Image (cartoon, rainbow, N blue to C red; front, side, top):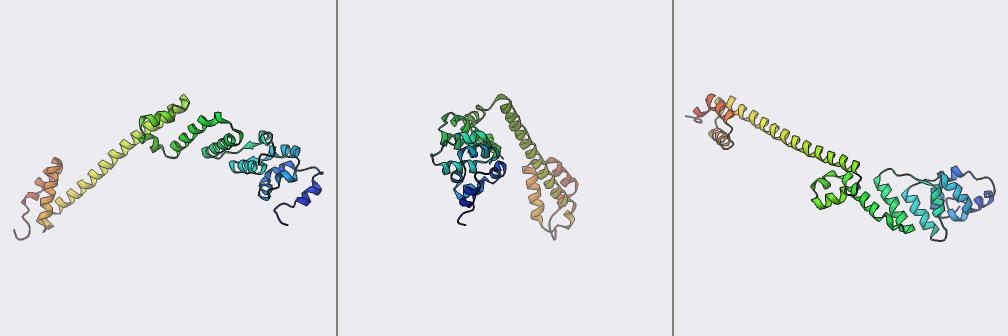
Length: 226
């Protein structure tokens, strides 16, 4: 057998009642064998395509097989297209536009592409200039635009909260470090450590820890042998 589908075998059974649903579910076998339009009558294909789980890849492959010899637009009217994500929708529309010269889809495809970019990485929209942001949001209906703006506002608020938490965490860690130095000052033999601590506290105007250090007697440190 030279191909996945034996043409002679199918020619023998073509007059029998065809299992359209089964054939539709296994349409890829005929596509790979490149004999879809050789094995079945066009009228049968119209019935078969009711059961084809169309994807952008299958859609494009069938167009290539037809190669302009068949008016396959009727077949696609019978089938449904499965889109798992926004990219599948975009791919399908691009194929329809290319093969059927439907130029009115141009703007719709651009809007969906921009939206897909935003959904894959919202920071692109956040960091883009006003012109690009307006171009993306301007082509989306009011309800969706409101939802996206609310989302961006929430992300901005969360970023601000995350920044504050990070700052507080850093401050807390630094305070813990300062207090550790102060509590262990009797055991220090390195005068530079004490000096640098006071210098840093003064530069950062950290009066709270500075008072604790002074009250703790850290100013009395003179280093080893003093």
